[in-house]
Image 1 (cartoon, rainbow, N blue to C red):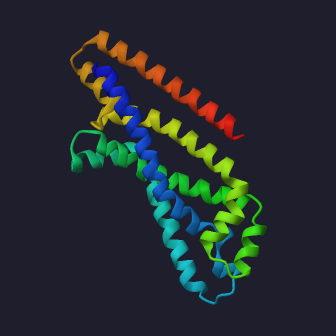
Image 2: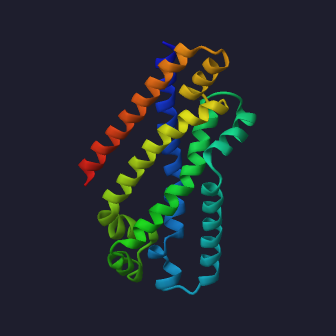
Length: 209
């Protein structure tokens, strides 16, 4: 029962972390994407202000993704105590920066002409994204997000060793008690969980392809 509870907690930690990461990544990705730069290709003269906002957004993105999630987990455990909250926030912070960078690159690597045409005709960035960029990039964006969820499952187990909850924390407790049977059981469950996450991710990405 303890292993089942820890497994559910690990999956919930990874899923909630990715959901919060998307909340961070979507606005950051839209801000730093040159494909949606009204100041660069649109009818406006406020270039300096727009460049400053983009520079700040890129700096924030670098800070978020530049610090590994395990380090964020160590810091957040000190703030929130032992439990899944630290793990969720650690995944959200680091993966938010990673997703923002890749989202912006995906949006810039696709066909940007429809978005540029919308912006030049007076459309705002949100409309240009929804109708100009998203239709052609949705599959790739979704596929990468699913892949990051798979990575988050692995990361949530590792972060358990610093007190962030889930299978990692349970395994750490069993190892300290020198209980080899419990450790072996958790290792088998961990391996099965990673394989399951990989299989689910593969199926979803095939459906999106």
